[in-house]
Length: 310
Ligand code: CUA
Image 1 (cartoon, rainbow, N blue to C red):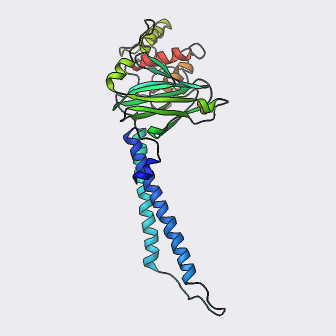
Image 2: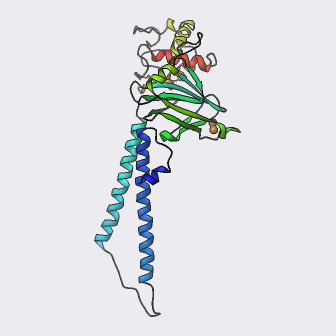
C-alpha cells in the first residue's frame, strides 16, 4: 500500500490523503475483480473444455445463492465508493468560515495572486500552514484551469465568472501549480508554485513594502465614494433608493421574481455591470446605472473587496 502511494505526488493536505485512500480503495477493488474474473474464466475454460465430439454440456438453469452474492457484493462495493467519494468531495467544496482569501487571476500565460493585505505575487501562491484558504479564481482572457496536484484539487478559471476552491494545507513546502486547460501557445509554460509556510512567515510575507500599496478594500471604499454609490445605498442599514449594503456579502436576498440568491462575488459583479439582471424585492428596476466598461478589473475587485467588509 505504501508502495502504491509512493507513486502519487506528495499529499500536502488531509483532503489529498483522503483522495489517495479512496483512489487506492477503488484501484484495489478493480484489481481484485479483474484478476478473480480472469482467473476463474481461464480455470473453467480449461477444466470444462470439450473432450470428445459427442460430449454435451449439462443443462443448468440457475443458482439463487450465487446470483444473490454476485449482485449483493458489488452493490456494497459500489455504494462504499459512492459514499466515501461524495463525502470527501462535499467536504472539499463546502465553504469554510473565516477562511483566508486570496484572489487568483489567470492570464496568458501566468498567475497573479492578490492577498487581503494588498500584497501581490506572480506565479507563486504563498499560504500559511494549517489555515483554511479560499481562492477566488478568475481569468483576464481565455479559459484556464488551476491545478495543484499536491492538494488533489483543480478548478476551472474563466473570464466573466468567479470560481472557488477551499483547502487547508498541512505540510510546509513547495508544490507545483499547473494550468490544465489548453489556453494557447505557452499553455505548457503556465506553471506556478504553491509555497506553504509557517504562520509567522506568512505574516511577514503578506506585509506590504511599498508606501503606495494599500489594502484592496480601502481602494474600494474610495471608489465607492467617488462613484457616488452612497446616494442610493447606505452602508449602515438605512434603506434608501437601493438596498442597504450593510452585511451584503453572504446575505440571502429575495428577488422580485420570488427566487432567492446568496450574495457572492458573481452577484455583486453582475449587479454592477447589469443592475437590472436580478432586482432585490421591494426596489424599483431601471434605477441604477450600469458600470459596464466604466470599471477596470482592479476597480471592480476593489469595490467587491470593500463590500465584503461592510
Ligand atoms: Cu492557461 Cu493553459
